[in-house]
Image (cartoon, rainbow over all chains, first blue to last red; front, side, top):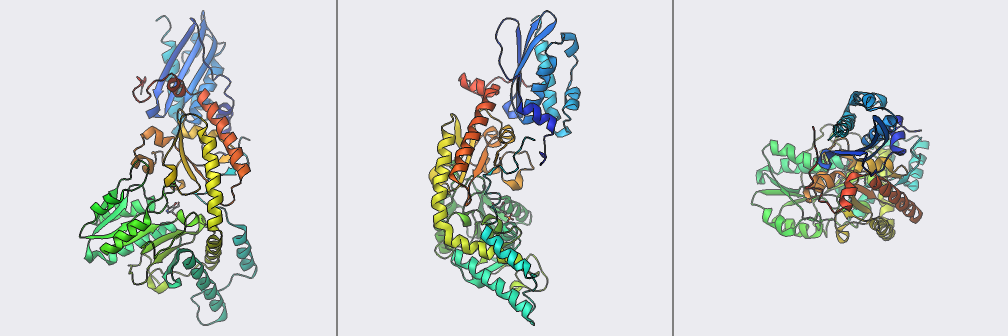
Length: 124
Length: 405
Ligand SMILES: Cc1ncc(COP(=O)(O)O)c(C=O)c1O
């Protein structure tokens, strides 16, 4: 079987199984959208938080397959965790899990930035 | 795991499949031993090889209504473009140093022009109208006393847009200016007559006409002189030295013979299939056709699906082989120079997808491709925040994006 020249199996597997691509409504939902089409990536992240715990996490992403995969991975990962546990998730962690090459690192950065932006909205 | 081994092939502009009838001729020649240098004039092996080359030159000449001695073998359209442009402007530099071309040419023309500019030539790059077509009046106005060459492609490899070669040829002939045409794409789609079209130099590529890759031809009108790029044993009247690849030439000759016979039937089928594909794609909302149907050669559609990243689209479309830019430039991440020249915004150009059909494309394949494309577009739009905003009627260009880096 031929290998994709850019995306590895981990990335492709998240990209083709986007279970968390959705929108949430309601008072306990925090949202942020970061990036721009001109930059090649836009990520909207929504967290449903109850007390100190993330009950649900969904995203919408415009960008390449790595961005969509990284967003899916993040959402799947943070569900059920405490705010404290996810606060320090950064681009390097995401890139490591997805084995992203340097050329795709900016997608992990966009995910980190969006997560920080959402969490920053707590108590606003 | 994710990709089919034999997806539906809709990338004929990048490369056409080898026609099985060409493959049969090639394998017969290989079975026989494929021996003979056409330049060995003293024995029968050489004579046989020369006969193959001569016959092939005749087959190419017939396709474009030229004479066999006017056909020069090259390694492909890239070399043909290089030789036509560099070779002619060098030879005729005393007549002038101004060249006219267009901003939507293949890189094998544009990069040559950029090189020549450094050598002191002046280049005018005509900008097409938004439908990709060059306005004839603009071309007329660009002509100067010292213009020695006009180089305009017949059919664009990214969009399929056709240029009015016949009219341009009339003008250049009247003004006594050489006219070069890159016909790499058009040879498999449109009839070509170098005499009626007033063409002096014409580039062809075998792997775009169902022949083997690695061989091409340059038509050089009798009497037109070129400074050679490749010097050596003086082969091909000194225009291009090097022993000829008889196997590839045999294949290109056969491919052109078949093209001559099949062209009009191919065209009609292609036209219908292209219409069918466009009807299917168009039924999705917010799809932009880059180009105008009435100016497209049969078999090409370049489209932008709003709200979707081009890379994500192609990655998700696992069962259809398409491309987002010319194969030759897809290593770079810059948007297509062709679409930018047509006035597309950078984002729309970046996300454009090229579908190109050809001789082996079937109705079933088109119907299946439309199904797959529809599925992918709906899926990716469902997860696109940009699409969400578009649906809300937001202006994407002026939206207050939160850009942190
Ligand atoms: C219009 C055009 N010109 C030139 C070329 C280069 O052809 P070749 O691959 O034969 O060098 C191509 C193919 O990519 C083409 O489409």
